[in-house]
Length: 546
Image (cartoon, rainbow, N blue to C red; front, side, top):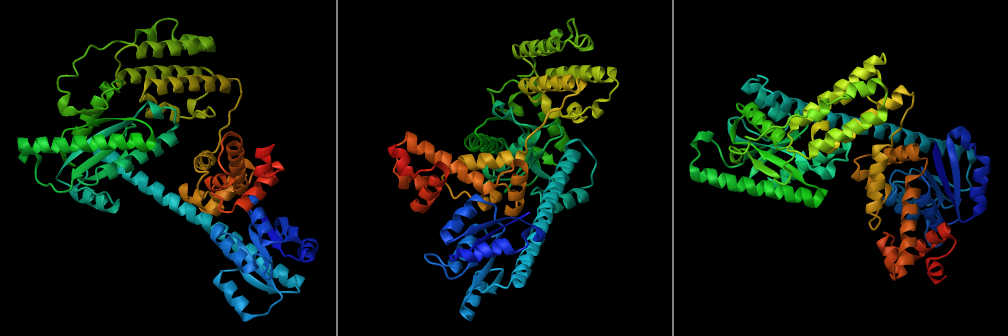
């Protein structure tokens, strides 16, 4: 629904329009009125206005100046100008400011309705186009990402592709690698700091790590990063200035190559720690010729990752340094199969006992030297038990609400014992809830992302447009999504957050009011003071003095 703002220092004009125009029939939900440009700006800050109808001749700030301000801060708003001056200069200026239309006073109701209806239609067309454009961008990025990932899977799992096909795909997908060139592969695992992330958030974090890798290796290497088939981030790097077969490298060049690679991976870890506030573990393979030996290199790196799953203190592992490290004693998971078994406990619906059994298994696992093979063993035993009890209840796992088949094949669950334990307890609770006919709900990821951005950027020029740029959405689309999810205008919510911060600063610091004004991104202390008073019934100075 449309929201419209009428502005005229002669209030009878806006009052008459508010009463005589058939707003509901036009699809207008709310009509706001303002007697000055400054009052209008306050309403624009607080409400999701779609159309502004403003007089030109107003004191302090005229309509043209207001339209210019609106164009800078809320470019999606349609502006219609009212004036009693049939002067070409006004019309010309209005066109320069990209006003939607221009109406002479006294206003003819039929002409007014026609103009506003045209503005509404234009808005709806823009919304539709913005949504289509956003969907096209999303589809293209998603398709491109999927195509690259599928190509990576084909290569590392050994699918036979001709050199011509590989060259074509490298070019088509804009992958900066060259065939028959010395190459190195890195398998990257996110550290414990990221264990709480859901699958989508973890994928975004891995994508961020990949982008950081491109920057960290940029001076000496061309880089391709992508999700690996076994839930690791895979980074493939080729030296920019080297060619020829790997066997032609001398011992001296080998040492130099190793030194440069060690430095690049060290920089990568440091940048991830600085920018993403977490650690990563890296397994670096031996050098190989791309793409003929990529499958062998991947299997070697994957095998090392399986073995060193719990060696987080050694965060960068070079396969050439691990030749003598992998002959270790392997412990069996006896507690996993000790009676009463998981299946027996599930059959008797002893949910608390099942949960305790799971926690005991992971407590024993964490006290010993485990590999990812052990995690797989636990994972398969748990999924087998969960599938068994679901089938005993006459249901396929894929038919159980909130679980679906994904929880069986999602290999991200076996990246760490903490994540696997958390997953197992979660699935247990969902199974119990499903069999008791209960449901759970979740919050929108985009809304949570927007709320985090605003909470950490109150000191900056935080507007719907700047936030939309951060989350790669159109401002109109983001505003509608936020309001649909929360029932609250995004602009109003941002102001509320700033006022809460202002209250805290006034109460707990000795900062001057103009300093607080600047810290919250306001340029005008008087406007900040008026906004604060509207929220709390007193000016900032009055609050501090009470």
